[in-house]
Length: 446
View (spheres, rainbow, N blue to C red):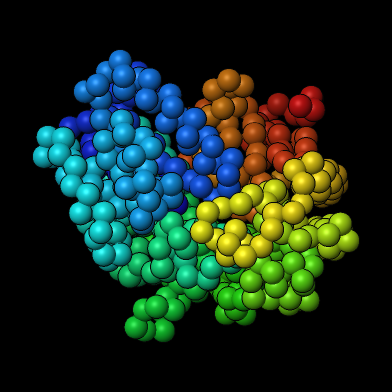
């Protein structure tokens, strides 16, 4: 979401005459777009702000703007007291405060922060040409497209509803217009975004849902692949699974956070499903799409989680053999139900022990799982070149990362790659025509 917001804002300030620079010390304008889903992310943002304060002291005419979940919908006044050197504060997806500040020659009107959610949606998405920023124009092969802003589910551990506001779906016409514009600028793959993407359309007037949107996006000329995230087990329907199975351009990949493998912990998290129901969702996906890649999110050390409850999560992990897992240690987030009503009673050392156990299990399982791709051919959408190692980087439809060397300009191409080496998190191979021309290659394990 932040990447998409930053992309739109970059285009808007470029329209005012700004050009990008990679060095903050040389910039006239610096925007820090923040995430606070975990304490570590907020700590990094505060660290960057400390750096910006020193630069601002040397260059007082520089404009510094703070954007995203750290600002949220109501945090600007408190942040202004804490970081007085920041000139402008912007909630997630709301760019109006900065644009008006720049157009008015440095006057910040805090009343802008009280605008309606509808205004925020208009700010997030440019109403004109959806032009990519200069540094991405003609180079971006993939792009994120927000389709559901905010969240109303309110899991007890999650700060997102308090920082991004209530759930709201973008009209399908706006989404399709943006996707068409991205395709015209060379983008081949789009990922539709939502905190609970499967709830797309539930707040709209018609029966248009995520399945309908995915089918329409897949029909946009020039778009070769479509992804979507993040799903919630309660709203993954048979219709959605069938859509992924039936439409070739929709990648066979599902982001289905489990968060925990124990029913009492899930209830304390207010996730809204049991672990038995979660297993049935995974079984439905794999029955319909046997080779589907299933990714998940896991939180270890949530309030009150015992070692035996954690081991239920460990056993779920072994059973489901996920293709990827984002494993996080629970951290207290302000205003959440867990912070107000529960005790963070699992020690830091124990959280780290549990995280490492799952991470080690994931590495071992993926090492074994990826071996099955060795000496096979996979379809790769080439995204960019790894400059340090002088090799191309791309992904399969199942979101497996693939590297290969080739002297040709292959950015944006979809081509078959022969896999010579597999690791737990990536593959190394050669374009198939190179295999036929040069024969077998020796690849060192990295």
